[in-house]
Length: 245
Length: 322
Image 1 (tube, helix red, strand yellow):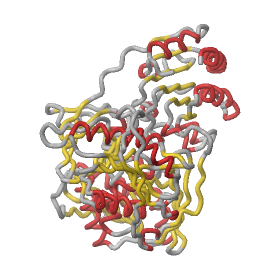
Image 2 (tube, helix red, strand yellow):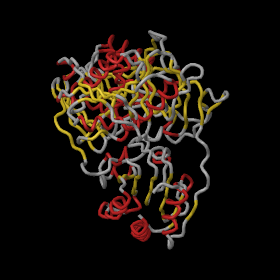
Image 3 (cartoon, chains in turn blue, yellow):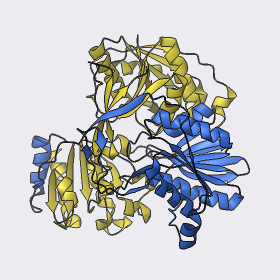
Image 4 (spheres, helix red, strand yellow):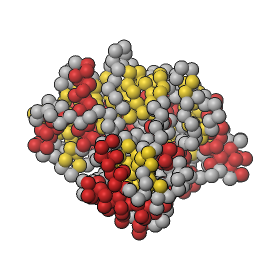
């Protein structure tokens, strides 16, 4: 089975979020970048499936050269080869177009990615790629097993989950607990250096909804502490001051 | 030129988040003079329930009652909504962010060539161009997004507008959609859903517990407090990781992001990844015995004390007051 995993190159979840250039750019000073946590789940499951069924596992990122270490890490975790579409990821539609093009070229049986990126949180790319390629798409998928050409999945819904069955090829946006994150071992890190990382050019420039101006939420005031022996005070504050009861 | 709202229903009732989407569309229509609000509902649901969608601001509800659409098959829903969009000649689709809504919106965006903005937090600014404010970095920032396509889809976040309740009943019209086998190529074989409870992603009040509760056997007091408040229960990531609570209760960066009016965190220290899931709450209360717990910095109100002592007392005080 040939699998494509699309990954994002995003600020670590503990990063302080700040903007620069008159709030038009993310300030990456001192920020560590990682494989998107949801993408990491997708990658971990893809490695397991590749090991189980054979075939090739390709990772793809739409990004500039600073994404290369992130792609190398994905290779160290177990991907066989990497593709970087050499452009900033301008918006979800732009990214979906690139993935759809290179996915078609690669003829993959299964395309996995995270349910959403943790920077823009759109959660749309898998559905868009699915529609562009005429493949079914599912998200957020928390369990995915392949039996022959049948795929059995669990998709999280509000307050529970639904079990699904579909046939390959398909696309899934993944989340935990689909697999345990994998930490690259020394052999993986060594072999990642020589695995192919192909840089390709974007196939279309079209965008539809580009973010232009950023804003931080207003600063939170200090916490009001209530004595533990007078919890009725808290009830009064919630009722009369915060007006949330 | 109408605004189309995709509405979801469960257990015979239209979801409150979908009614918020209708209210959002109604306010958008008033702001831009963009014509009436038409909702589209798919699958089996009583027409009387759909007529009540008018109270939130829709003048008409298109109902494709094909029972195959009752379960949310993503591809089929995207096709049906695209057909409703063509039929009413809309330019804008509004829907509530949800598990199914997100999946349908992404496919719909390609079908109708629409710019899609998700996590929308307020009405668009149409003074020059079409700018939409959305939440990014899991609630840690906002982005103004310029939509350049003629057709647009807005997936709105909870609490983006106040729910309108004073509209007149809507007329309900049957909608016939043509769906192919390909639309139903995937099958939903079973659904496990907590019934009769308040669902976490849609709840107005959430009571969450963390490792400070020491074990799953101590969740009774969390559930009691939630019951008093009509709240949903949540938990921190370590708690769902060790299996004390089910995964769908995990609130945080990689779990459910909630936006209730009131979030009560009990025995949760407040790791940045947990805060990312709750920072859209209107009011946060933290109960923790460690006065240095980072969660207090993100809280509106706090009690430094042992949860086992404070929570039952708080429950009694609430019962006396509510």
